[in-house]
Image (cartoon, rainbow over all chains, first blue to last red; front, side):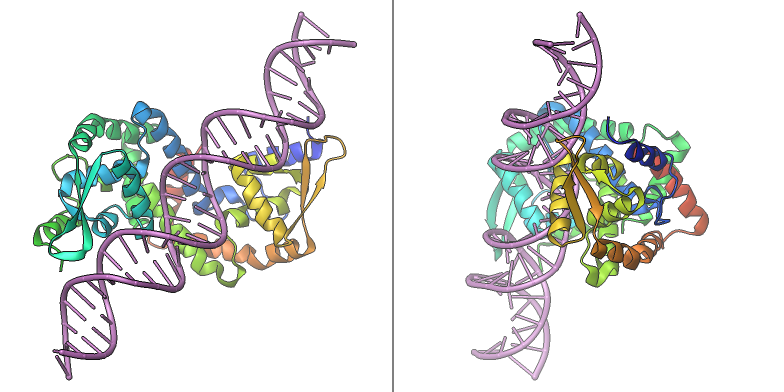
Length: 158
Length: 158
DNA sequence: CCTTCATCGTTCGTGTACTAACAATTTAGG
DNA sequence: CCTAAATTGTTAGTACACGAACGATGAAGG
């Protein structure tokens, strides 16, 4: 085993007690948001299973299915992704044949995105999985708590 | 301007209405967690200012200040970081002279970490900033709502 | 017109985040 | 005691995340 001193510190930390600094990481929103997001990502990966979609790829596909044809930047805005991030996500989806891209005839700066046939099929297949993932993530809360939580969380994410 | 159709879709999405898929991204916890985390990170960067610390570097320093000397993996457990992630965070903190590292005399696999003098000074300087960041992140909520939110969030992050 | 300003998509650099594999240890069990 | 299992830290690979800078284009104004 490690050192006894370190173990004592670890137990103290697990119990949420403060150390020298008076700064308890477990009480800070940032830390909790990060951990909750980590947990959700793990659930996502496990539930989405064989489809091998990441959360962002999933969001982009669902959104594209909703709005039809759009430009890359616009899809980024609709999914809260940076233009640089979007670029990578789209690149991977195109290379997997789930999205088609063509130049906008009315604006030569733009690239218009649409779901390919395979993309449409993918969306149909995973739509329900999305709800299951949300359910599993919220599983520790009661029905009423879930509503409260979502309502508050939404106000912290605008 | 872009196409009218795309704009109509964008407005619809902003209003939280559903599209073809019946899957409203804005109602899914994962998406909201991601956005709230994004917002927090932005607040963190803006508030921490000149110190140039990232959230993870901040967490590692505060934790190390609490527990004193520990190994890398153990510090990772105490801050909810993967061993591979921890490795990178520590590498950067060492290269900035905020952390010292020495081999554990009782276990030759381990590396023991401590705050350097500069690290101690950094911790003293940024401790208060941490609370200010938490406050600013929770600013959209009332005092009672904040408590509720943290309590629920903690249950979703274990 | 034509010049200023904004937008589009890309690339680079830095920093999470996690899986998988690895060599070097240490620990546990027979 | 000795082998099998677990732990420690590292690396490689993939995927977000964002600031900053870029060239190309488009829009608005005088």
